[in-house]
Amino acid sequence: MIFIGGYVHGTMIVEFPTLIALSICYLVKRWALLLSSYNIYLKNMDFHTNQENFGSIFQEYIIIEKNLRILKETLSIPLLLCFSCAFVNSYIVLSELLQLKIEPFILVEICTFSIMDLVFATGLTICCSMIPENMLKIKTTAGILLDRYQLYDVIKEKEIHILKRIEGKNIIHLTAGDMINIKKSLFLSYSGTLLTYGLLIYNLD
Image (tube, rainbow, N blue to C red):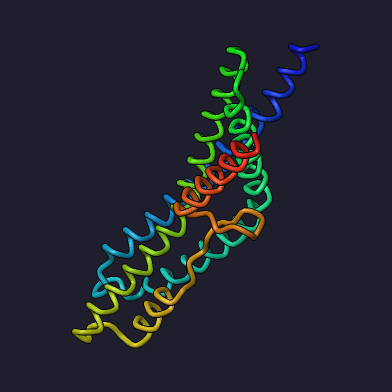
């Protein structure tokens, strides 16, 4: 019974969340690479010779943005579950480590869970933050092109309008349950919360 309970606990607490996190990271990484490729294409485009294809560039960005909004809505609940699971596991690990006496086999299990939680929470945060970072790069590239070509008056009003539209687009942040924007600064909040709970548990003991 102990073996079965340990297996079920390991499967539910470690294996399933890790598989979900890896799947999300793979999916988000592909979209981040697509945004990066779009930024490189926009940066290297010669508007003197490719003005007839300029309208399609904006249409492609609209399609990417639409799909990213769908991705945001689709991953909102799974991301909330993953981060909630990581936080709860970290809280359990913290409370166990603050106990005076811990059996060696329990300590190994606790360390394993802690490392897994840290890995998939870090991976999710880094991957999800790549989308707004790459969108910001696209906005920056559009602004640079706008300044460059508008200064020398070499592109038409239509192209200027399109670059302004791209530059003015909102940045999309993936969220956990529409409550938390996932970005790298989330590490600070996560660490601070764990430190606070650790101090509370230590003082209660």
